[in-house]
Image 1 (cartoon, rainbow, N blue to C red):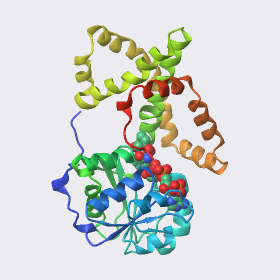
Image 2: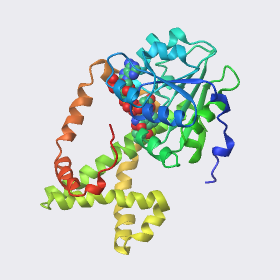
Image 3: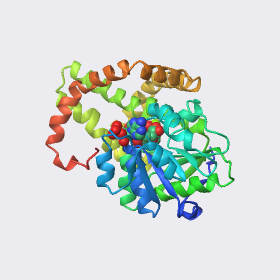
Image 4: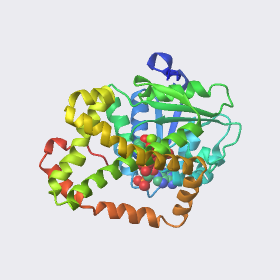
Amino acid sequence: MEPMAKVYYDADATLEPLIGKTVAILGYGSQGHAHALNLRDSGIRVVIGLPAGSKSRTKALQDGFPVYEPARAVQEADIVMMLTPDTVQPQLYKESVEPYLDSSKSLAFAHGFNIHFRQIVPPPSVDVFMVAPKGPGHLVRWMYEEGKGVPALIAIHQDATGTCRDKALAYAKAIGATRAGVIETTFKEETETDLFGEQAVLCGGVTALIKAGFETLVEAGYQPEVAYFECLHELKLIVDLIYQYGISGMRYSISDTAKYGDVTRGRRIYEVVKPLMKKILEEIQTGEFAREWVLENQAGRPVFHALLEKDKEHTIEKVGSQLRNMMPWLGGKDLK
Ligand SMILES: NC(=O)C1=CN([C@@H]2O[C@H](COP(=O)(O)OP(=O)(O)OC[C@H]3O[C@@H](n4cnc5c(N)ncnc54)[C@H](OP(=O)(O)O)[C@@H]3O)[C@@H](O)[C@H]2O)C=CC1
Ligand SMILES: CC[C@](O)(C(C)=O)C(=O)O
Ligand SMILES: [Mg+2]
Ligand SMILES: [Mg+2]
């Protein structure tokens, strides 16, 4: 398959559309703190919107930002970036964004869920774009600080002014994404692929593989510590090779015995998993997952909390915590 996407790099974008403008970042969590700090380091004025009782206020103030109630931040802004959890965005939009939107302001997102599934419907006179980093917010900040970047997708939902794409590219450049590569997509494509990636591969798929592998070994009588090293710790080392050199590059570094097991036994896992992946994609495309998630939130998240708690109690977490304490170099930076 020939590569078809146009990839934008630093030389393809200018910060000009953001110079002298104010960006309101609503939310100061994983993406919020990273966008805010990177934008400011790129010379853009940033204000933060958080409710009076928000736990994140202290951090945003410590980082030196003006912090206002969301409605006030929106009034100050030329560009409003929605970086609260997706599930709180519709109400936040109704109460604190929509009343102050006019054609002089742009509305921006880092994920297409609420626009694609029509939980938020902005007025046609407003530019609406997305800059969706393809990586966790903390990495968006740490890579920027190291002079690198996390790739991102941009998408235009409404171009009321004719300048929306330039603004999206400027924003992507200001958070460091054009250092790594920015691809234009649609809200539909970003939403569906992002949900699929996190559910079937990156988060749901990987953690299911780790837990299933660990449990299989422990239930067969092998030591949990050995199972942990085999199924979790070493995963990063293998994924690092894939990340840097591709699948074939990783295979260059492993033994022939591992390579033969990889392509023959891996094939059997692939055949079981691929039909499940297609089903998961279908649930996303039909809106079934979105409906379920919206209802789960309306009910107070009972399933979500119960399943997260159950996994926190899994033996792999207890064994892992002890083993990681013996490897202080894993320490890493503060995720909070
Ligand atoms: N996490 C990631 O790396 C990625 C996220 N995205 C997208 O980015 C967006 C933000 O996600 P993420 O960074 O994970 O979000 P977080 O869960 O990290 O954001 C939480 C922040 O939102 C604040 N908040 C909660 N409710 C409100 C409210 N009503 N008004 C204002 N602020 C509020 C929280 O304050 P408090 O401390 O008071 O709770 C906190 O500062 C989502 O659209 C997500 O899909 C896209 C790519 C990757
Ligand atoms: C992989 C999870 C993610 O989609 C992300 C970090 O990109 C998210 O929504 O957090
Ligand atoms: Mg993602
Ligand atoms: Mg996501």
